[in-house]
Image (tube, rainbow, N blue to C red):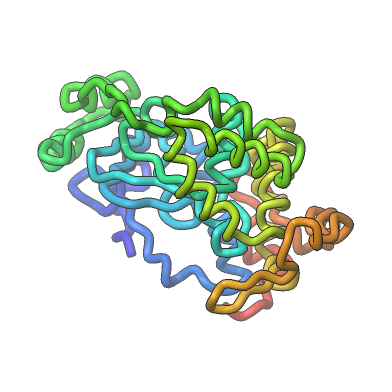
Amino acid sequence: MAQEAQDIDEQVVVGEQKGSVRWATLDRTQYSGHKNVYRMYWLCYHIHTYKKTQVSLVLAMTLGGGGAPLMLPAKFSVVTEYTDFATPEANFGFHIECGFSYIHSRLPGHLGEFLALTGAILNGKELVAIGMATNFVPRAKVVALMARLARLDSGDTDVVRSTIEEFSEKVDLDKDSILNKQSIIDACFSKESVKQIIQAFEAEGSKEGNEWITRILKRLKESSPTALKINLRSIREARNQTLGDCLKKEFRITGVRALTIAKDNCPRWNPATLDEVDDEKIKLVFKPLEDDLELRIPETEENRWEGKAETSGFASVRG
């Protein structure tokens, strides 16, 4: 776990304590059980809305349900040529979590639906291109950048920005980048239902030059039908929801997913097809929890640090 900072008023937050700078790390093994899931979501809200200057260094693979919720929302998120990102939850029968229905719903066109339903991977350059990361820094320069940030005596946003930009490089997308397929993605993933999306994507995949679709389509068809429907609805609803609304919704779905989605090691889904999924049961997944079990998002700056797990309905829950 990250070391506790000695100076709680330090201006630049980047993790474990190094002089006047904190370099934050997360031990995911600590996050198990309902109370700790609650804590994780509550923390995600504060990462998104934190007022101090934050710098995250995303140096390798990061997932929507892993480190990405704590890194990509930072004021400055730095990626490298070794950075990859994905939200593959539907492939495993789960729902995108920790604010990613909100983030994906605000990506260009219907890229959010595409990423959530297919689990497609974006590299560091692509993350910068769509605004999910702020800077691309070659891995060879990262250590020097960290040293410079640690020596800063100001947390002023412009000072931090100019420091990072000294090490940053302009992003040029690779020729075969998935982002160069945006028109196809929008045409297919704007369809009303998952079934229509798959049909449209199949039709595009049959055209010459669209061989890239075959691998992605295979993974899409292998995903949980229930999870696909939940994720599509969640992102569509998120376009008209606040960050707080999305986190509350995702927290509810995370709490009931084991009851609504079943799979074994193969995977063979139950229900096995999109047509077999009961849409009325999908609606039930989105219903609010009992009031004391809802995620409590602070509504004003005055009560910013309220709503902790210790004061929720999970306070007596072990784990």
